[in-house]
Length: 458
Ligand SMILES: [Cu+2]
Image (cartoon, rainbow, N blue to C red):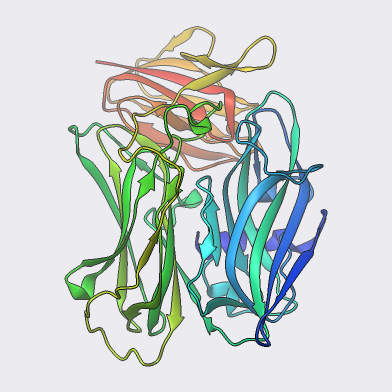
């Protein structure tokens, strides 16, 4: 659920196609209309032990394949499956952190938003009766995804996506409209600093203008650990709430809380979605605003506030009327029992054991470097130089990223949440430490072993 920037990053990936492709169609006859379930499976994608695999950093240049038919997608879901059995892979093996699909079908299409996105909460596109996302033969699609291997051995998966496609029938077409409260920071993430009073909240917002008059007929959201809610608002109608997406958190023993290493605080097991056949009337040019609410008592680095909504163009909507919201709004939630309240923060850093396993560590091995002022740290060769460093309050650290492999620095625990972008080729990141205490960090792309501990003196 991203932005034009992500499209440009993925488009070069589309030039080559390597991978296994399986196409299955199940036909169910209607009154002239055909409904088929189209499944595509791309892979095998290899993920190294405890490593992350990113779309454009993975050998093979895997790209998504479009259904190549004239019709409409009414439902869509994605998962990672075993290469041999085709069955979904458990999170303790490999986790699909996120996946986002773009339609690069035409020059105009390049301007539009992702049409489907899913995080580890396994959100599905489920459009209400009579609506569909239009697709055409010969379309090129792009995608962005991240896989994480939670085991000490290299592993392989295929990415499987399933679409319910309606052909030979005219449905009402929808336009995807995506919101991102990081306001397009690289990676679509933001850092909640924390340090607030119990109950304090971090609010972020992102506004955009409705490109056409129409009806909002469905929406889904994505957040990370620490989130309270996402709220889509209509400023022209007193800022009323159109749709609130709320998280359901897994129970303490859910696999999200058992796997290691973690790249960010475990996210929810579900975000509520909405759909409505009547739809919420929105006038062309009208502003829509997404507000993300996170706990700000604790730091939450690499947080997200993403919402994907579907707008069905309707020229009958002439202006903003602020009429009552349609009564047929349906809120879709998981049937699994979970926790309503944001669970306590659970994040640790990990080092390699002698046997090559990820083990929790208080910090990296080695002596603590005592700095009397600003310091520099080099992030390269899967480690941070000066892994343990002590600084006076008010001093800064500049991290440099000289190599060709992307790395970053992400706060695990400490008095203030922050992270750098993913950097390489001489990129740098500087942070001034104004709060005394112990900070632990990891690289979110190499979370085992690429760790750091900073002590800021009083
Ligand atoms: Cu790294």
